[in-house]
Image 1 (cartoon, rainbow, N blue to C red):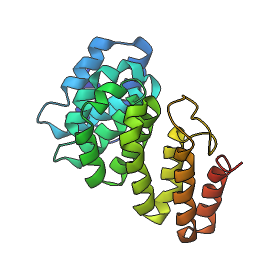
Image 2 (cartoon, rainbow, N blue to C red; image 1 turned 120 degrees about the vertical axis):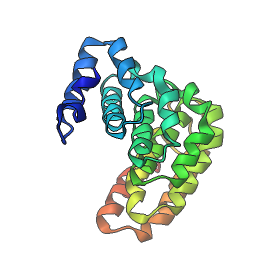
Image 3 (tube, helix red, strand yellow; image 1 turned 135 degrees about the vertical axis):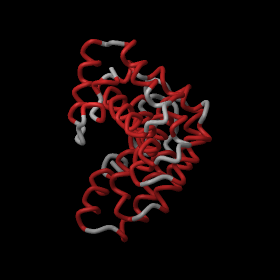
Length: 219
């Protein structure tokens, strides 16, 4: 499988990697996927970068095929290669609903990468944490306050997008229970409070996105 990676074909674009991901999804070739995972561990940075691309593209399509490799993706979060760090977090975002326990088991490593990561790492980190909050009440109790703090302090231009990502684990209505029954209305109330306080910093277009989201929780 490694011979089909873009770098091994002498290509500088991502098309071969996406095509390989699609082929592995179609065939559900677990042996082939394991070979791609093995490429993350080598010293060849180009191979590793192409491998994580293939794996998170698989995750976006059929996360169940790569969910067993959560530990490999978490290991990338401590890499000195930023491409592998944000690629690992992107892969985790894709599989978080399939492997919440495996990810939460190493949540300190995820949080460390989230707090010190690049824009892409942080974007996908928000998704990872939100999906974990949605998965289990005990995860939510620890992680939702961290998401709210992030929403309070992130750059204004990130507020609408990150609020949308967080919204998957926010209660349907203030004062009610969440859709999966593992939270109370305080979740929505706190979320609305933070988002309302950030609105004065937003551009008209950003405020429109925020207002669209707020309507879901203020009816």
